[in-house]
Length: 496
Image (cartoon, rainbow, N blue to C red; front, side, top):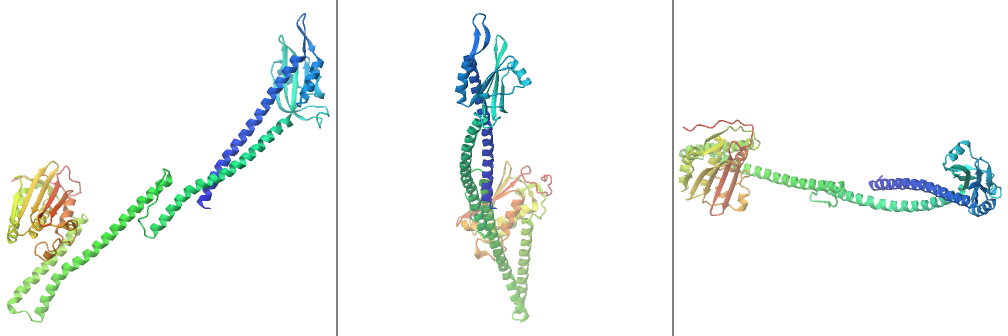
């Protein structure tokens, strides 16, 4: 069975059950009310006929009996309303009976009447005149009410009417209620349809959207109106599609990066391999002059070393990226390290016509892995030298409240916004014309730097303007703010 019909059936059943319960309760209350109203009316009749027919002795103010003529008049009047009565004296003897009405009063009832209690009987039988009823003992509802004078029981009135009159009224009420119930059931069916439709329509939208996702369309979104469970489901669905869409874009991006990586790696390796192969062919066919053979062998050695460095850089990058390296962080003097790096790279800078300037305090402490810190700063300074000619490269550092900050600023060729967005990619080179220089020929230096800074829990930022220069800013957190990576930590190194 479809969900819509199940919901309709559920709504319809619930409402019909409620209507049935209310109807049954209403019938019972109404039936009870009809009997109570009838009994109250008959009590009023009994009071009237007693007041009209009772007789007293004015001399000694004693009860002497009832006037038969008055009782007869009341009997004629009440008979037209299908009400009959019988009058009993204090000795339980019948004094008067209208239309042959002869009710039976048991001893138990008589004792209750003598105690002043009024007895109301819902259904009973009594002998009636055959002209009044078609049967000798028709069903009646009866009221027995005692009357006292000066504290003594003087009379008991039994007054009754036919139950058929009450049942006719009750039958008409039930008939009207049944008509109303049928109309309510039809309205309930219509309302259940629209309620079920409002829910299933939203679910159908979700189903249609799910089919779109199954086809590979992750841009689909569904309306999230309302605050019920279906709306929550729609919000979860939209969150899922957004995540799938982002994942799909990331997969495409990673696939593009993989293809680019393979192409770049092949390109980087092809150049030295082509050089080595050409020299080997020249040596094989003896086309290289004797005086150039030593130079050719040296060139093959250089190209072989370049291939080894390229493979090692790739291995290092993968180890760093997957956090497979061991870092032994400690506090040491970064000023001494930067001074040594400036001296090591001074010759390369001079060859480019560059000037290296160092601006750091005498005791600049940093919390990092010593070898990795050297690798990071060496790569960034070397990168600045590579892309700066006849310029100035400024290396600076300072202590901050939560760590140490370093800057390497040059006034070289700079980079565009597109180049800035890709400098952390493997094999990416901002200046393709320098991709075969002896400095940073693999294109992996900055990618390795970025991963190493990340493993330190630090931050690296680069700002550049094409034609004006580039500034790298690296931040290393101190011991208290650095993330725990499971690597060994050492006590601060004492300054000599």
